[in-house]
Length: 590
Image 1 (cartoon, rainbow, N blue to C red):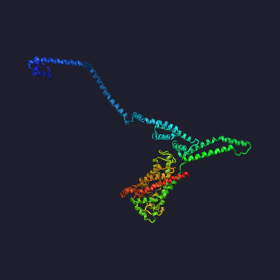
Image 2 (spheres, rainbow, N blue to C red):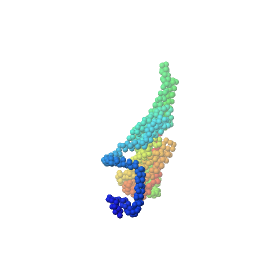
Image 3 (cartoon, helix red, strand yellow):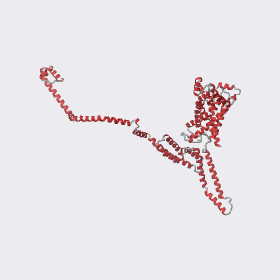
Image 4 (cartoon, rainbow, N blue to C red):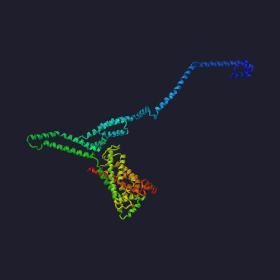
């Protein structure tokens, strides 16, 4: 019906859905409604839509005008956009290439100079306070030097800190410049200290302080010359110059004496003394005697004497080693017997000794090779230890102290690490050199061999095992002696003192503690060494001996004889170090 109405109305063009819907709506109405009410409804709807359009136009006419204006230039804008898009398309590859180049130039792996400069600047900014503190060190050092003698210790501590910085950062120009300024300040301090030694009426306390400071300064200013070699000459020159100055002050008295002598000579009288001459000679003798006594007493008390000779160390070590070997031989023999038996207790070895016809002599079996080995071993150890430490002190090894006796021990004072290394090297050297005597000593102490003399022992070992038998267990001996001697030397040196009434007791106690503590660490190597030297056919090397002892006797066998060895080593270390220090002290007082 709607299509018929469309044809009736002459609507040739295809109607949209709204037209068809309206025609269907008209179809549903009656003719009267179409003629009467529908025109009014259409008029109302038209009027309502007109008002809505007017209101919309009123509200949006500005936007519509602007839209129309923009629309008029839209084609030009589109053409411009297309042109810019083409330019962007052509520019993007270049931008990508530049971005890649920038990324490569500033990457961490590329080693960019800009990044390096930036990192350096940031690093300097982060450490600006430290740099400022570093730059203030020379001024602080100079103020401490020029302040008073109370600031000299602080000056030396600051200079030591600057030297450590210089050794840590040798390539830094800033640290190098600070070091140069500090060297100038410390030279001025040395000049002031040397000048103070020339002052009249120098007291012992002031001389002790001054020489102590000079001992710390001289190795820094003259590293090739030990302080112990240069300080005595410096001290004597300063005091001698003061003596000459004081004697020159007696020139008026001398002139009066000369005038008196010429007057007597012109009068034809023979010279027989005079009041002015006696006055001058009396004053001259008083000044010379007073200054000579002052120089000698201060020189001895200030510790500017030369260090002990090498022969003193050898003789002192020989005497202390032989004494301890003879006194403590029973403990060493019992320790060897316990390690030989593999038993954890001393009972079986003690029963064997009690069956001997001469029990006292049995306890001191092997004393001769033990005394020779221990005596010369201690002599080589102490003399080589002194030589190594003297060389380290003269070579200005980091961590070393004064090159001579530092007042705490007869040996040169080094750092704990240097003491440990020097002790280990010296003991290992002595152990390797005297290894044949060690093998003979152990076999004399055991019950497996019955040598009547040293010569027969040498002949038997050479015939059975060759020269190699004299060095059985050398590896285990080195592994035992190196840490033991290093720790003992470091610990005992850290605790020993000299020049005090309780020096002997303190040295004895410190050596006991050091020897007992270090025996626990080195006892497994001592047990392995004993097995190899007594039974070389069953224990050929250290690894095999270690394995067989653990598998056959258990881990406990590695610490067999520990109690005896701790007691023996503690007492031997205490006696050896105490006798050595005392003998060196007595040599120095001669």
